[in-house]
Image 1 (cartoon, one colour):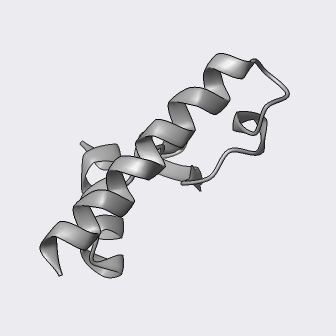
Image 2 (spheres, helix red, strand yellow):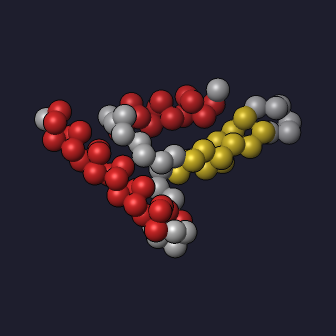
Length: 74
């Protein structure tokens, strides 16, 4: 699937298995039926507190895990 290939490419390109959030928007080309990437996001501005404090807590915990795992590996 296109989204899985793009996700794998980004992980390999930036050397990280620690993508906390990704969103991939796809659009099917009406001419040939091929899926095309419309947008790939690894950071969503709406995650930064305007939605709810639960979002901020979840992001904070995820980032803390990434930081702790990085220190344990290096």
